[in-house]
Image (tube, rainbow, N blue to C red):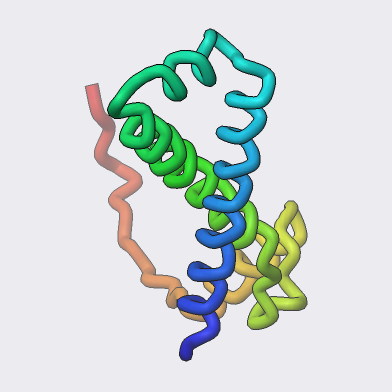
Length: 111
């Protein structure tokens, strides 16, 4: 299995587990009277499922985003950003340019 797919699956599982803990805490502390509403409704299991899925999608996306942002790019170890890297890029680009002479008539004036 490719590393990126494995990373995605692991982080989605972590996100849905965090969502389960979050929904469990919502019900345990009876926030907005959710525990009473879910337990006294015949479709309470559906409300619980939708609540967990919606929070799971959000938590999984955030968890995967954090994991991707925390990854280190090993290909460009010498280029860390900032002004010096911009100057290095400019120096590399200057070697590719060739000066072209342009003739200008000094006698003509513009009005």
